[in-house]
Image (cartoon, rainbow, N blue to C red; front, top):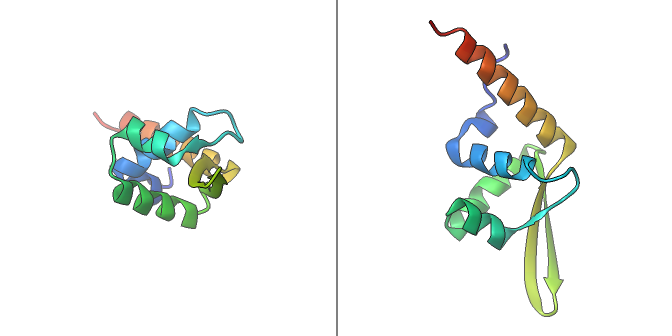
Length: 98
């Protein structure tokens, strides 16, 4: 066991990664839908997405739908692998408790 990934381990980031991992590889979710799903403020979600993006775990795509800006987030292959490793490490950690 290498220890729990500190980028994913923060409760809010863990919820974000778990939600995005439920999508098919390559799929993305709208920022507003993710915000509503997780019950986060715009600022809180934005900060955590930025941290995950900096780690290479997700991509943020900004586009326009008509004249309105739209932001989409999706896990990268690296993010999916990191989440799987996190789950493996967590199970190993829990297996070590009496």
